[in-house]
Amino acid sequence: MTEPMGRFDAPDTEELPDDIRERIAEETEEAGFTPNVFPAFAYKPSHFRAFFAYHDALVEDTSLERHEIEMLVVTVSGINDCLYCVVAHGALVRIYADDPQLADQLATNHRSADLSPRHRAMLDFAELLTESPGEVDDAAVEALIEAGFTREQVWDVASVVAYYNLSNRMATVADMRPNEAFYTLGRKEG
Image (cartoon, rainbow, N blue to C red; front, side, top):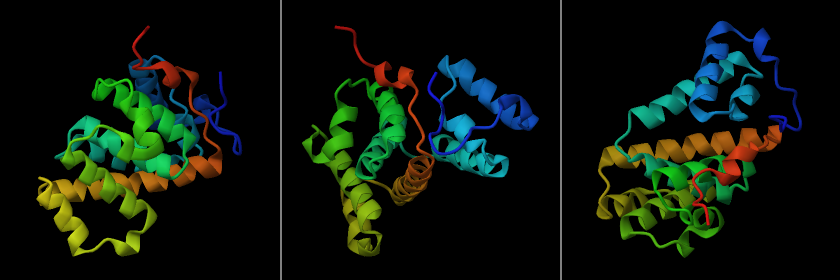
């Protein structure tokens, strides 16, 4: 089993508060393994609660499709060189988009992927917000609206991008390690 983090020690699950132990158990049951992000963020229980409460809001109260959220995550994580999120969310792109190649394309250069004009505009915006947030202006927002996004969807795109820029930076500082299972999830057998 890969240690969750290379630079910090993950806490012993048995010593964590009940609510966090329960959440980790639920995630383990659902995935069939414990994604390393959970024990890693349990390093600070108050941060764990806030981090996952916002995550849950982003995926449960959204005007975006789940595969679009994961496409944003992988694109942003590729730009930020975040191995954990590229690998973990790459698996989710493969599953939700039912496309075994898309995640790899998005992680290296979203412009190389076969995308609809709508999704290209979404990922171009994600790149701009990640690399040059000071350049996000009315025209950048209007480009998304012209591509078919509602104002609520623009908000949701920006929220996902902002959240995963935070997540990528924490994963990088912690040297968070992807679980081996993520590398093969959603890949079609040859």
